[in-house]
Length: 423
Image (cartoon, rainbow, N blue to C red; front, side):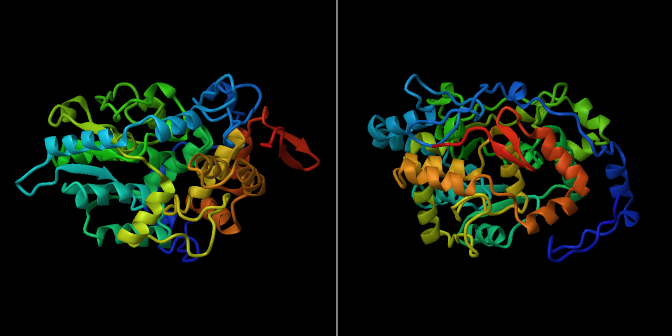
């Protein structure tokens, strides 16, 4: 393993060297992976259709896990947006939200609602609305990105200085980097350690601060396409932790132990135990159920109210937009592995929801997807993941090829190209 060096052009923080840290030696020295990895059966793992087809209304593919297409070739996300525009009584939904807030509102000065928030446009919208429109006293809790971008940190600070209280949770950096490498190899996503904490840190903080009301942002399964059975769910139903099963991921605890992690290493990623959960009965709700949720409108709201800034140097890698998912330097690789597995990247996701919001036409979306979706991460992002995860170039490329879905990709000369593209 190579030594870690302070690298201001990649991290902007010194990481120290392996031989200076017995903790780094312990975590990185156990479960070291080889440079060649067994091919992952992506279609079976995610129960994907054999052939990619694309929604007739937006540009989303049937390769998105759990999405459903109807007999007319339209995805369930588009059908939901049709219904929300015409059939949902948003005044009645807002009355439900007001009643919900009244039920949990406190008069003793303590926080009465917890909002998981990165400082991004959507969670900032939720927290700001709850405080200044619905007269709640929110506590935002933030599970830190792998490494903050400059603009991500500014937007996070902007929300705090707009008058919103915050607790920032930052996990052990050595453990987090080791988890990121392992998840890249074995799950095809370096963002998984962030997702583990993003899901489980808020209920832990709700218990610690005795706040039974948690307001999440969007129900992604409904808004972006997924399991249609959750369309009428008002929120995520809090489930008791089960440490004997898997606690925080889709793998058993023994898997993580076999790779050199301890319960102490994993404690912040884990769901609360049954005993912890019994102290505070948490209700988690989705703001998307109660409000006419529109991501671009959230952006403009936050520009005006929290000082939110878009990416100052232009569009984000792999897409045409510049105002979403700005805070984590590892983001481009999350979307690139998504492209390898499902044949669609960041531009597809952005373009699909902008079509549903009537911001662009489907023809415009097709052109944007074909131009940006398969873009490889920048040289800066490439150097970042190599150093952050302690990958050799051979290891990183082997991980990429492990998760390439061969039902969606074919070799053309020396290049890989998609078998089907949106038209």
